[in-house]
View (cartoon, rainbow, N blue to C red):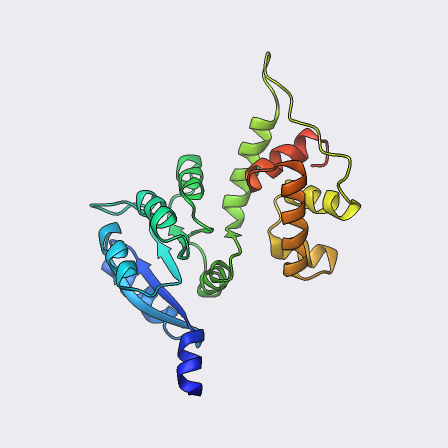
Length: 226
């Protein structure tokens, strides 16, 4: 009975990359983690979708540039058809189109292939727990993009002001989001748990009608908090 429970507790992961020289060693390394079970290795998006349908799957570690069906479109289909499956992007590309395309399609994490094994396993675990992890380079690019978008051009409307009922802690969390910190970074900065950070973010987003993290950065900048 205990072995079955342990097996059920392991995160079931698909590794998707069109290059076997990347896919196979990565799957082997991840399989060494005691809480990760690599259930499939896929060379393109159609193989990912087939493996998810065969299931169960918790997380897909997704390359973006794959033949037949690329990572962004595969992520979009997974988000629509299998919302319980989290996607973590692992790619060599960190341009705005790739980042915004993947996150807009529903990816919970985005890492570049400079990430180490510990970074990748941490991102998989976070995604499996419903959290987001972004590579530092990705965070910086998102922050730069959000800053550029936050400054209204001539004739554009300024960002909506923040509501008066935000608590001091919620404003503090928004400030740190505006500075590009992850949930973990915010937790370490404020000496609170990541679960508490997530609660503050959920309340903040609901009160201020914030759509996503990029929107939060824009609102923080527009309010002079970042």
